[in-house]
Image 1 (cartoon, helix red, strand yellow):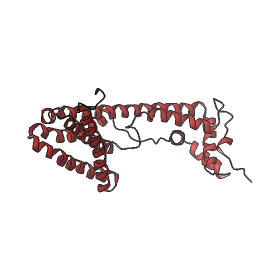
Image 2 (cartoon, one colour):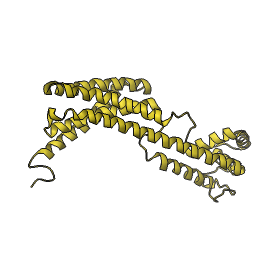
Image 3 (cartoon, one colour):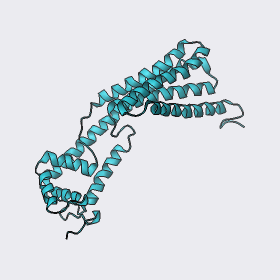
Image 4 (cartoon, helix red, strand yellow):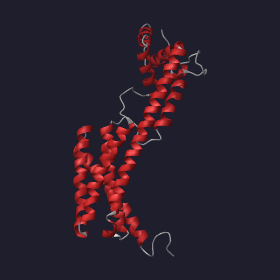
Length: 269
């Protein structure tokens, strides 16, 4: 009767570092977390959904800054500032997502090269890793040997397998970082400027009416597009955006009012 293996038993004696297969996988996934975990925009999210997130965030931040201006009592005198803010937020979204995509591409490429080199220079060790990984999944002899032989017979198939099993990464098409950055820049620019530009032209009373009404309409448009791409309920997406805008805007407004009060703020005596 075959003995059931645990991750601690999966030791590959010919490992270059003398570590178990479980340790090798843990090290590889730790590299992935170190590179991918530091970037909020990295993850298994397609570029269109990412652009819609940038559009939503631009709306919320423009709304929040407007409420902060209202809290400070600046009002119509500073409404034109929102246009500059919207442009700056769009640039930030484009640069941030473009840079994140570039890091993702560089990371995938380096790990592909690393894994391909390990396969070519230490093929027996990679086969032992595959055997250990599939033994941990519950495969037993003679099926285990058949599976390992099949998976390791083709270098590209083995490379794909090791990328997925060791790093939790799937080899997929990634758009050019400049293109991703451009999409996110345009998405944030359209929504941010659509909300901010009328503020510079309207009267103070009409501007105060446009900001919540226009913001809600634009948020609804973003929610509809997001729901179509994520297959989520449009009301859920819309409500989530409104709740985020209400919380962040409310905090900004109240904090600005407190700071603007002579008896409040950190400089009050």
